Image (cartoon, rainbow, N blue to C red; front, side, top):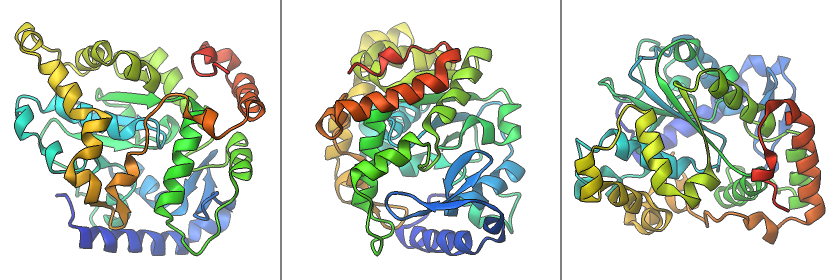
Length: 338
């Protein structure tokens, strides 16, 4: 499916919400509003905005993965926009010189198709239609937990890049984002303290955070050649080495000529937070019919949670994460430097 126009996206979003709220499956599921008022449902251990549910089920049934596919997986606000730009640039660097990159005029969110959010909700009557480009390599994104990825994808040889982030910063970033886009403007959002309490109980879009995290973490340990597990903080602090790691993992390593020409730094400059934020398309454009593109670019800082949460709040989440992840082998101190 080609990228939709703004008008088409508006119709898609309207239909997504209408169908989602009328879905008979919801009668069997626990439901609760997110802190911004958007209705969610608990499906197989994870909380989903209700307009995602049918797309989740339909993509699981109909999506046909190719061994040459690439998938970016993440929870919301963990570096998804940045990674979309980086992956698109790495994979397509032989098609588009930097000065002709589609990123100059198109949002990363329109260049990388989501598996679950839009297309499959509307393709129930056309199950043979695949989202995005039909030619290899195909690049997709998803917020789905590993446990709910389409079976054809997990059984394929396609490469999955997962990016995560300090959950304290992720919470603040998502909280600010949801309050800015206000998908339910008639609903009064919860105070940040109550929203944080919900987060610590795992009640948030695509949560619990720790179960989403552990699904990809464990899968990456079992199959490191197919799943690359990245931390936003590492990418931020050492972008060159991590760009090199990503390119190798994708089977698209940079040549000596590309290194000597400075292409790696050119890609990093093109995809940097400051550059993307100040491109005209990302200052004024619209995503999904109603979300202003500049909503995706706030700060991108590490440790911004300290400006919004108390040390005791942070400690409570650290203890929850420790309880849930003790056996994982992941060093939580890389996140929680209180």
